[in-house]
Image 1: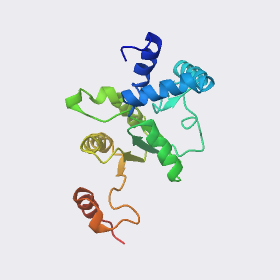
Image 2: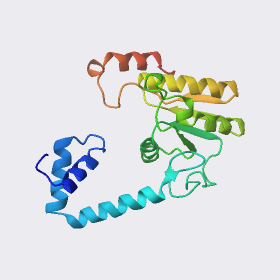
Image 3: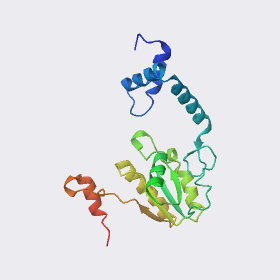
Image 4: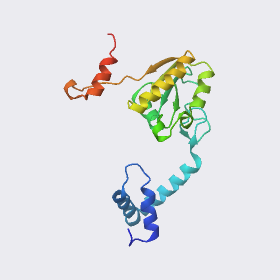
Length: 199
């Protein structure tokens, strides 16, 4: 990139902040925007600027929102006694699109990871404890990812909820619908077997 002008280099480096975008992808995107789609680049710049200025975290659930209280938290028709805890805002969208869940959410924006220096305060746990202590919750649904860190986070949160006599459930993990046992990895199969249910 030594022969590129500073503005082009700067754009390539800026695009590399996106997940999954390496130097070659960033270079292709830059040249595409500058050579073939300047209007699209302008719209992208304006949309990005507007989003960065207007989008913050909901004061209650921590999802990304333009309002201080997001539309889900302010929707009185949603069940106020169920709280689904997820790792990322995208997890909320996945649950909304795939299920009929109509309760509330809390977004951690990550998971506990002491090795990376991510502790309870980084995940908004004090704010979550305040929600627990307000009363009114009958069920906390733990929907963290089935990773080592996700499981550790779920265990930590379940203890906090149990201490306050709140019923805790965990999303089932296991064999995908339409899957065949011989092709399922041993960790998934072991987890599914341990979590088997009565019929």
